[in-house]
Length: 250
Ligand SMILES: Nc1ncnc2c1ncn2[C@@H]1O[C@H](COP(=O)(O)OP(=O)(O)OP(=O)(O)O)[C@@H](O)[C@H]1O
Ligand SMILES: [Mg+2]
Image (cartoon, rainbow, N blue to C red):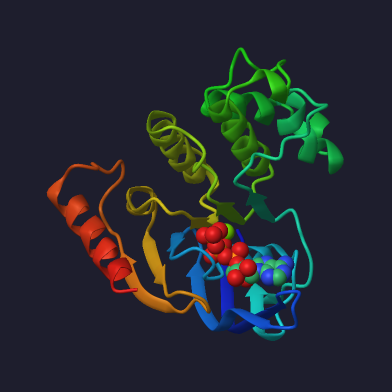
């Protein structure tokens, strides 16, 4: 089995704001993540979180620094690095089932592993809704479909950019548990960007707090609480408060 590994060393990404000004989204940003780790990035709006995910996905390139996945430089997208966006981005002309099966079909793996589609559908609680189209389903179902569509490829690395932020609190908590369930099957690295501190503490092995742009690591919390975690337990609330306090210093 491949031991997955992500390394970002001195990553710099500068944008042009259109008026000739340089915007330092990331300036010598460093992060290293080991196999099976769930890491959350929290920080103020505009500090470069999505920029970082796009770079890791291979959708953009840094001007400087080294970005490597499994010790190979990242220079384009790959199905072993999955991306779940905030808006589910489902294919509107495909049913829930076909959205989830899409990647397997594209790679010619569907015939061999079609039972995986049903398995994922059940894991995220979409059974009975497989034949509906994206316009017929709720935001929560769209979020679940989007997660299943990415997880079915069994990527070694999954990038989640605020995938649950448009959902109500109950749906969010249910899907957080589903994320843990599907993560436990193959233990990919997960990099989660979220503004929800409770979500970060609930899901992560490590929470990283970033400064305003250009994003730098200003706090790092290792979370060893056993799963499933209790959101109201003293030790949970304690870590949550510590993360909050770090953010308030910003
Ligand atoms: N393609 C682009 N062209 C120009 N500027 C960009 C581009 N993408 C991002 N930026 C700028 O880079 C900075 C970081 O943006 P980014 O989207 O990474 O922030 P973020 O941390 O994800 O913020 P949010 O929490 O609001 O999603 C912002 O100032 C943004 O305006
Ligand atoms: Mg963003």
